[in-house]
Image (cartoon, rainbow over all chains, first blue to last red; front, side):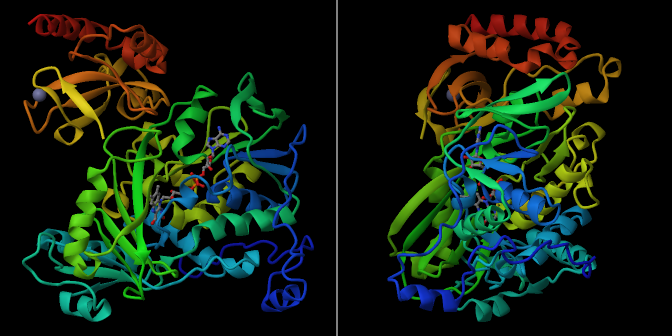
Length: 432
Length: 128
Ligand SMILES: Cc1cc2nc3c(=O)[nH]c(=O)nc-3n(C[C@H](O)[C@H](O)[C@H](O)COP(=O)(O)OP(=O)(O)OC[C@H]3O[C@@H](n4cnc5c(N)ncnc54)[C@H](O)[C@@H]3O)c2cc1C
Ligand SMILES: [Zn+2]
């Protein structure tokens, strides 16, 4: 599996948009940066498209880009009710890794990882993909044993993964506290060196700019309010800016999946839950990797601006409020300051929540439905940012060919009937 | 942060409670008479409305008893708290109950006899 490369389609900006480069920066400085071209057009909705993608998050924009770049479908639109990346794409802690337990997961997350490695070139947009490593910590004997089982499974799938002991962890992350007497002691961990982070907004913007270059219409401030059907066939979408005719609709709306599904009478196993994150005031570099703890539901990295980025757990009840309850980050911070005593005096700069689409087996749904022309890509829950390129790539393929490819096939909605679940709670439960 | 009025202990912080998810999911009695897809409606498919939601809660760090709650998933306003096995009484929660797709499922129809017994049990408990 490790050697097949995904079909990246047409690279660069074949549509003829001026390219971003060091030279372009120099050239534009002559005109005081007043003459940069728009990154994408503010398109008016047309009356008809070959396909409509609902949701202008990373996954929806990636789907549109690959539909155009790989499958030549350029008469398509992305419809977003707010602004691009204003959903979970712009709210996440940007952790990227492909070290999941099951073969089905390894296939899709590694597919995504390969697309990340080269995405900035594909899109001619610096998505700031930084393979700084992702280290997941074990706090008990049991967790450590379970972890080594996972590490072996991951390696059998040709994906890099290694176990570190407390001393090696201390060497790798000098600011961490490995004192065994704390509430969540560091007993060991496992590291994926190819894992890391990327700039979330840049991912949305990069895909949007490249899709626009290929002719895709990107329509913001336009809410889908209904799915129009004729019998068991989709014929278009009702929006706040009028009816748009189309035979193919891809729904990529994350936390709002159940709401959009209900417009077509489709049932999903999804629960929408708040997930929270926060950043501290910026400080000098102290952490050059990503640390995760599944037991605490804590994950931490340092942004290029110097802010400490900390993610917390998911609230235990359904909500669309886009804010979480305070005890959740409080619990996470209590453990974080023990693990990193250097954080204890830092002030919090911002704190926010996003509504994530959690699935019973902690795996996504990439599926046709029993309505012809209606497709769903959802259920990524707490950990779908890392999958943005891979998800868009296989979902575009599903929409273009009306059948899932080998990577997408296990992720049908039908698995909740057949019982062929892909239980990734261990790898994806809450932490990323 | 919610303040939840436990019907047995009074108002307490949300941290004392655990949420048991969608309420009124009845287990189909005649499992072998319904299809796998219909059974999946019971086992996996979930109502996930943006607005009023009927759910089960437990005062897990208090009296440890269960109850039903009608709560708005956008404002988090608690509209009604009512006993297990009973149906809601406020107009808004009643219409949320009948609006759920679950009311039309084969799984729910196959559970009908069970629901009546549970309902009676609820009435008896609600009376004290
Ligand atoms: C706090 C937090 C931390 C996270 N950390 C990580 C992490 O470290 N690593 C990781 O891999 N994942 C992480 N995730 C998960 C990740 O953010 C998501 O899985 C991923 O970004 C989902 O992308 P998306 O494009 O599907 O959804 P979104 O970006 O949410 O996009 C969906 C879009 O659909 C739009 N929409 C909804 N309804 C309609 C409608 N009716 N009409 C038109 N448009 C509509 C919304 O406005 C939204 O912009 C985190 C999530 C959160 C909230
Ligand atoms: Zn109580």
